[in-house]
Figure 1 (tube, rainbow, N blue to C red):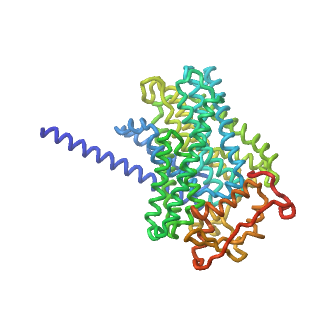
Figure 2 (spheres, rainbow, N blue to C red):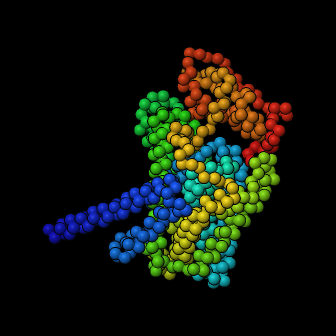
Figure 3 (cartoon, rainbow, N blue to C red):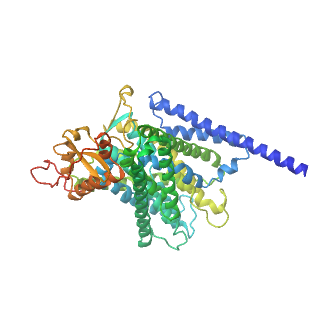
Length: 567
């Protein structure tokens, strides 16, 4: 008995040492990345993306771990991706939705949906068909098994996910002044593209046992549509419910810590419940963040506005850095253990380049036929094509590709096809991030779509809404009106003869109807600019307010009016 207790104590001490070493490696790596990121964003370290620095650091850590032959190496190699999906991925996607510039997003919603949904399906089909043809000709090392078609579909779906953080860092950061249209298209398409790719990947995994699964089929596309629409509804409903709870709690602004906790726990609860229902928690979480940014931001206290922007941004940045560090670690530990094939890597790289071009350029031409103003230029299309970096989402999805048969450990023959997809994804992420990501700044500058900004002239944006400034100051030129609903009173400014009013007139009738509904019903109920503006209004003053009837008459509309609801 005494020896058994002694052995248990020694094992506990050993586990404590291992946990301490892992904590030191993780915290030291992230702290080093903070320093590297600071030097990158202050122009002291140029031509190196932060994700590339994280992968390089992870590769060095993995090489040291392997050289020292630490016992925890196998545990790292058997990482399945569940930790990523339930711990690291939610804060990344939530912050992406929370910081989305909703006005630019809605202005170009049609184009963004075309690139994100139609473009992802086209890219998936092109890559899948190419990989299957190459596998059948024995060019890329994939085994021709009954499940080869679904493996090619899965790879096409996962590799079609462009990396939102890397793209936004290049084109949406304060280091550059970007064309608003390009910024909106790249930002919106990259985030929605990840959600669509994850939904498509999850849909395909439910058809693994089909004898001859077809990507373009009623079963798969119907399942994909149901999951996507259902996830959007779940996210919007959850965001509206939380915003309504915040708007009804007048005293909650006295407790900023409860406000932040409510947003954080509401986001994770939305993700978990949506996953439980068999839908896409990632898509629901993104929509949840967009709704909070549009409505709930105006229900928060001033300390919570600043704190939420900093806290959620920091958590997302650390989570993204952790994913890229782990990618580098797996790349180092998998050499000589996983199945690798140079032909598979080169062929897949060519396939994704062709697939990206196959939807970016044709869709740009088609969308320009529908756009009367603000055309997508050739230079913008080239930048969108080149900027399709692969990153965290593609890597995490590759780890979820199952092996064939019951035997499940990396390096075995049953995992040959799965291993090749993982190692090919790692190589593509490394190549696109280190090569394309490094050269992206020069390419975009040469094409005159971005220009550097003097760091001394960058403004502090912590006091702005999470989704950026959404309401123009010139909207309040006319005297404010008082709107009353029950016991609540707030100001609604007159929108006549202002720039936003002109933009409103230039929209389609459906857009105008929703804008009126948003101003009259949604913002008073869930929160919004009109509610925030009414906080300083004397609640004893009351007057009947009626929204003006906006009708797109010829004489009132701008000369270059738009005939479509969303461009």
